Image 1 (cartoon, rainbow, N blue to C red):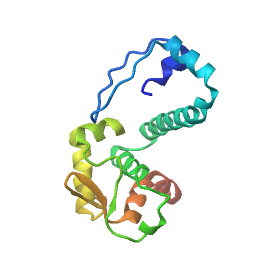
Image 2 (image 1 turned 90 degrees about the vertical axis):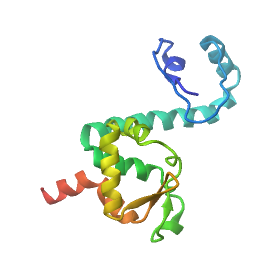
Image 3 (image 1 turned 120 degrees about the horizontal axis):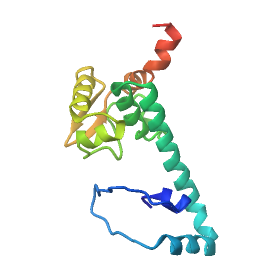
Image 4 (image 1 turned 45 degrees about the horizontal axis):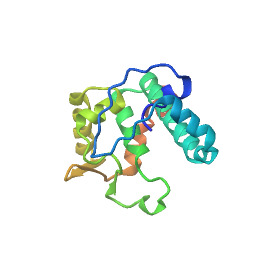
Length: 162
């Protein structure tokens, strides 16, 4: 599901989707989709959590844009894609960042509301500081604790009064 807003409120929504991977597209008139959802309530067991995840993702982006600088937003984005359920990587170097590998710096910039050059500069700074590196276009975290500190910059400044 790409554009859930139209499904929810019935209003047109001008969007320009672009595929990051090969895909098959399924398209249906909005009225038919709404009828299908009503006739198959078990679909909601999967759809509602998906919808909640998408809304929370947009809420997180709005919060990040309002409160954090581009460097902190980038650190927070990278952390969102670290598998937090895997406790085996707490002190292990070389944690791969799932779902962000193979994305261009321009795509990452769009995801954090910045420009490609700015994201590139912050990634280079994180590499220089030993926080992460890239292998075959894959982001690898070398110092998870340092990355977490970068992502919590605002909270740390508020606590210390800086």
